[in-house]
Image (cartoon, rainbow, N blue to C red; front, top):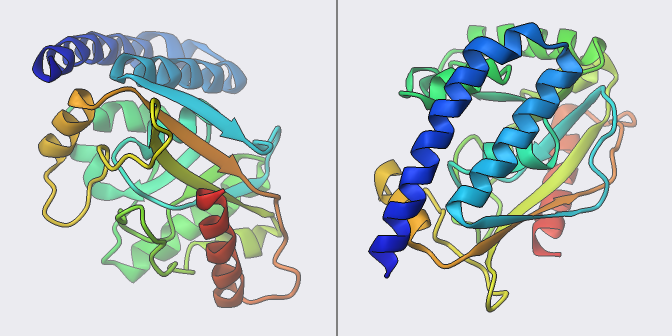
Length: 245
């Protein structure tokens, strides 16, 4: 049954991705920014449904920008989960741009790419983020810099918070987690950490019983005189509490 379920979900996801590529190439360029955001959100929510994942949103997603969403990072699914809860422009590692199919969809959704090993590129992206926040956009980052095991939150890298400081924009903590729909217990099926391979994580997720992705939005907060490291530490604590609650 698990294999049959996984194959059926895979088939549905494949055709949904093809639909997404058509939307990215044909529909999105003709839409205004607000309509583009709505289209990405609807597509992402449908993707979760094809995988067998329901969405539960707690707290209040931002209605308008500027705001920088700051979230923990568990899985390759985190970006569509957050898009389904509230469309935003992500800052992601440059590798994703070259992923087959996924890179095309991420670019169409407005992703900003960063070469994490390059300090110069980090400054370039910070400037782009600052400009986007000054323009009133909603951005999102995973300050851990990599996926964690879902049991704890890794230390945050504070560099990208400089964009919010420079734009005098608030940051809003977000806690993510996946739970088994039947038992309510944490599900680690979507995890992508350690020795996991991307294909292995995808197959495990497709094979899993129905899940719920919980997205818990905290209250937006200003830096209030804190430097980026102190602010980052406080945001990490807030995110850790949200993902548990």
